Structure formats: C-alpha cells, structure tokens
Image (cartoon, rainbow, N blue to C red; front, side, top):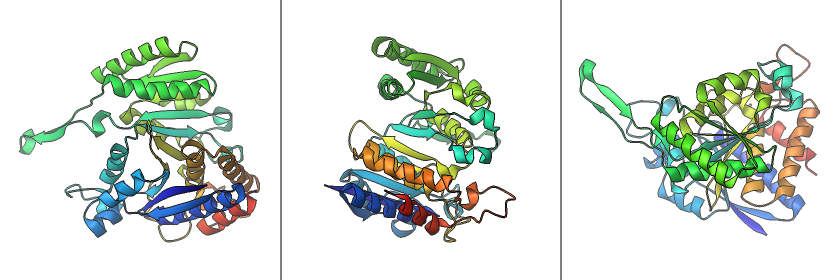
Length: 360
C-alpha cells in the first residue's frame, strides 16, 4: 500500500520541521508495512517570491490529487507590508477553500511530563482533554470587506456571514466526535450581540435536539469561555465554535500545555484529503538555526495517519514515541525547564532522531 502525501513546507521554520516529520513518517511506514510517495509544492511567502502568487495552481492540483497534506507554516516580517497586493496568509485561506476544508480540529491535551512548563498551575490543567472544532470557511474571514470615505471619515468594514448549512455540518462533525469521547459538546457563540451567532445557536440547538439527543449539550458565550479556559479547562470535552472565535480561543488554549511547539491540528472536509499542520507560526527569528521544536509537526503527521490514511496503528506508534521522548527527559529549548542547567536542549534534528529511535 502506498499513500500520496503533498508537503507544503512554506516559510520560516516550516522546511525544517516538515522535513523532520517526513523522516518519522517514512520510518513508521517501514515498520507498519506501507510506503509514502511525496510531492513538494509552494505556499505562502516563498510562493509569492517565486511565482507572485501565495497559492499557485500547481499547489492546488497536487493537494487535490493527494491522500493527505502536511503543512509547515506561512508568513513572516518580509511579507508584512499592509499595502502589499497579496499576503502569505491568503495562500492558507485559499487552500482551505479550494479543498472545502470546513473543520479545524485542535486537540488540547497537556503532556504529564510538561505540566510544570505551563504558565497555569498544575492543579488547574492536569487532566485537561479538549478537542476544538473551529469552523473554517465562513465568518469575517470570507465576508465582504472594504473601505469607504477618506481622511478622518474613512471607514473600514468586514461582514460576518454564516449559513444554516455551514453551521449544521460543523456541529454534526463535532457532536459525532463527542459521542466517541466523553459525550459532551459545548457550543460557543456571542448570541447576545451578534445576529450570525443567533443563527448559529438556533441551528446548533436544532441539530443537537433532532440528531444527537443522547449527547450532553450546553452553550457558553465566547467571553465567558475565554475565562473558563484558564480557570476550569477540565470541565470541557468537545468545543465547537465559529471561525473568528475559534481562532482566538484555540490560541489561548494552546498555552495550557505550555508551548505552541507541542500542538498539532487537522483541517478536514466532507471528502478528499485533509490538511495537517502545527498550530505555531513560522518563527522567522529562529529559522535556519536548527533549534525549532519538530514535535507538533510530527504529531500532526500522526493525525494525518489517523484521519486521512486510516492507519491508527501508525498514528499510535508516533504518539507513543513522542511521549517516550518526553518521559526520558529530552527537551527542545521552548519546553526546557528554565533555570535548570542540567537539561541541555536538543535541536531540531537531534529531537527527530530521538523520536526515530523510540519508534517500535
């Protein structure tokens, strides 16, 4: 059995961490009796530099023809000019839309070995296991936008738009996942202020009542959820929310484990390949220095094996290897205990080698 994987290294540390994850994929494929054929394509800032387009058509075509996509990161100061005709992030939004990837999955599970690396107290985060479902193709990111007037009267606007169909499909996916976990789904909105959130709440309530009456269901306003995530995160199982709120809340929740370098994500649609990536950015300040943490990207590769390739066995092997690396006390700089001179942080390649050594 051979799988076709498209690699999109992107910008900053993307090429380093994607290369490391591909090595781990090759090793686990060898162990589990399958093979992987890779193609590599441009996205983001490097695509702008080489083609003038953050998402070339060749990249879209390759992704559509693959079984799964592994992305590094996009963007950086080089392309931050707000007056530029296009930006690297347009490539990321574009590939999601081109592949109809409407659901972003972000697991928030602090590793026991890293609990003390979190800025929150151990007793608050220990036992936390949250799976976020963020809707990806609606909201202000895709609503009509523009500017009117000039000078001090210049006004900018961006529309927040949601349809019944968009809300139904993400709620169904999240509720089905909750059934397989602790059977608890929380929907987050701002229905006390926003009309799109009122539609969201109405549709979500109907879907849950008609199709998932067995799943415990509750609703929390987004500002309240921002507080709950840092004072009682263990209360939540699966959380489903809109694009803008999900963007903010999942970044907040990413600090529970103590480092962005440990958290993977998956973007899925009804059919076709999924897109897998670490949740951290391109970290241009450390690009090319060989010190980036590859573990989130390696764990994203495990998610790809599970959700797109149907190889749960291989996914588990990678996750166990990562846990063993941490249990053995190995750390990259971002997760090393501060002030402990006895722990010498590993670089990117040595950490990849450590994971490879523990694959069985």
